[in-house]
Image (cartoon, rainbow, N blue to C red; front, top):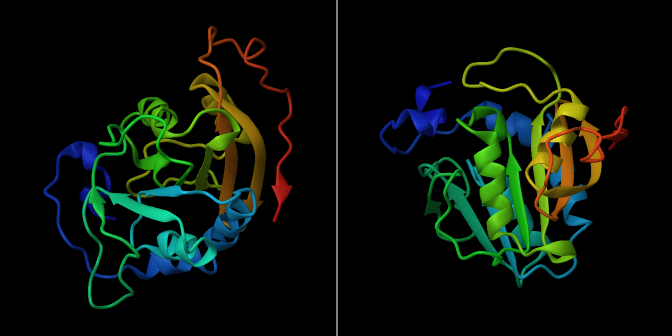
Length: 214
């Protein structure tokens, strides 16, 4: 995996040729199933943002499930080539830590296999909370690797579901559910109140986090 997968290293934006691992993640790795389950929680979303859109698999799926919605694919650089289908909308080239988007203007935000690559997952999640509609009008879907393995470009390990739950609570999200499928663990969460403590007990982090198999 090239260093450009870690945008905080300030690598030059570029167009990359198709990566078969991305298609494997979507089809056989279970990301597509997770995305479909996330869609089941959405009710007539008007704006769906796909952060770390990559080759656009999730963006196209959102457009198929919600034809009237505005789908906003976001990535640090374009992956669009002649080798695969185009994005369903114009790609927004942006940094996941600092989105050029109005606050509370997104109804659903999807971020698959990006959190483990970022310089600051805390800052990114707070930024995603900012752009999401607050309360139950906004829903976040995050997918991370289920296995605790060292991979090129992965700088954080979120394979422990309790750690992922804690991270969500620490950044002001109310957790709806955790699910897993093949290589993936996914979490759905609504933007909630700003936390006033970092203690596990104060944040309501359970001793054991239930994870449903998809």
